[in-house]
Image: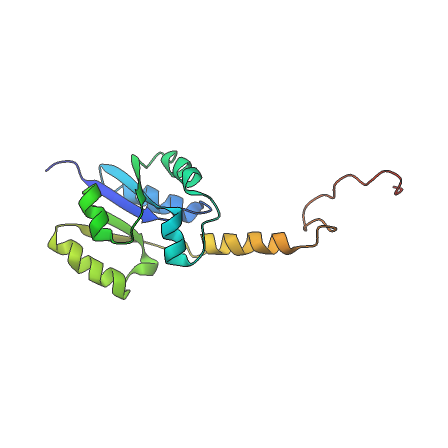
Amino acid sequence: MGERLGYAPGVFDLFHVGHLNILRRARGHCDRLVAGVCSDELVVRLKGRPPVVPLAERLQIVRSVRYVDETFVATVDDKIQIWKEVGFDVIFKGDDWLGTDVWTTLEAEFARVGVKVLYFPYTVHTSSTLLRDALRLLGEQSPSEPPPGQLAGPRPSGTGS
């Protein structure tokens, strides 16, 4: 049997420990790992909003992870089409997708072409959505008051001590 190629698709926006966990676990189940990073346009189509971090930067981050052998820019959501281009033997996904109609259908389609679908535990305590919401809340705080836990900047001259 030849080299086993794995594929880990994702947006990888606001890269966090959940992303790292999936890539680390995926690398343990294949000889080479390709991380599929969604294009900015695909993210807008899928989520209705652009990613916080642009594609070029997300690619740099994901490429620098030691578990990733190469990256692939996903411009379509059709995983079978991506399989035709990449040729992976196993695809990895967070278990929050397990049992969904989309992935149950994909499992059957992939089984017909000999591709295995492996699910890994979803990192519940952190997600890009939670990080995005936290950043939004921080951005909404009054600029005259520093956010909690941060020091105020220097006072303008003539305002006393």
